[in-house]
Image (tube, helix red, strand yellow):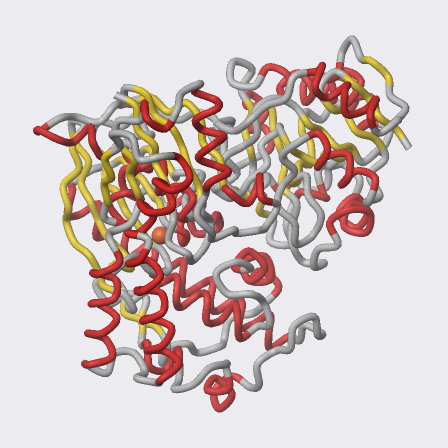
Length: 557
Ligand SMILES: [Fe+2]
């Protein structure tokens, strides 16, 4: 059986994946190919890439599975909220809901554009409940037989947070908290209030939080311990657009790109703290309801690596799997597996150990590009060894190898790499390439064996989705990847999983005595991570990177 999984909601992060007999073959987000960040359009390029990879035509697909319910239930839930006063009844809000409904209804939630672009064939369409698709994307790829499964996101159709019990390849629903009682909404509103883009820049608030002090009272917006939590939506969203309603309690909203004050830092601290407590509360409830010691997380809120790290450090669980594509791009992975549950069937149980599910480019294709653009290059006999030499000499390096990552993190395929020992490297990479806010930390890639020497937990962290504390005596050794509170967001790299990247870190360790690399995504600020060699070359030459190791070739400035 061949299935396509698709995320298409017109909200954000359209994506597609292809699964054969329950085994994931390929996955890619539309934004990487279209170059439009968080692209929410119908993922026609991603679907085509899936078909090309599997060398099949659309008519050979048995079922196309969307990670959303049809448009009707979403709209009905919105209307119920307006009627019951749970969401402000304004003409703009109703217009937006209606416009979204009509657009998705006309498109049969994606079936119409699919048929138009790829031909109708014998394809069947399936619409999987959004939180079920998230839950499947976590449980089915965890490798656990028994697990508590928690989904927390901005919103599904009617869902905001849900708990599931995975056991013996089946997934039972335990409970759902309806939208708008949503941790994603809570965090997004304060992200907007602090002058960042909601549902996109939550990372920035998380990175800013450790610079703040306790003391801001958010009890009128959230109770993080109300079995499991309660968000006070009306206080959170006010009656109109904008964030002016926060002013009486918290001061005026911060203007984008303006100075960050102590008050802003303190608000970020309080928001992160409340979110961590609420997530912990949901997890405790899930563990109590399922009596499991294994935990699976998905949904955009599960990208909160700081909170995930606290859950791990709490000792409440024995094992954790956080779906690395925790945001809506990942529902494609879950939706594509939904047919496995038909007729009392069971899900596959193959743990996801890497994120390299996207397209790759052979050396001859890369070389063709280099020749076409008349770029001087060197052919390398040992790309990893050369890269390690350059890094140890303080160079900022573009690293383009193998299959592209699926999910928001660069994990050694489309990465910018640098020396983590240099305390100035954070500023150097920011000035040369990323132009990011000064407070956002960069993450380290460790040789897996070296992680316990440097970290207090998260020794098995292949996806940079858990934070851990760097051992105090090691913080001065890797200062550019240690955050102000002593934490880091590690990637642990295994030789068997990514031999080339492992070797790079290993060689760097042999030269410097520190088997750790600073790893950030290969993109400029505001752009999607590079996909093709052309994207990589364009980004390389429009930034301050010193060298690029692309496949078996070296390009230097
Ligand atoms: Fe979602």
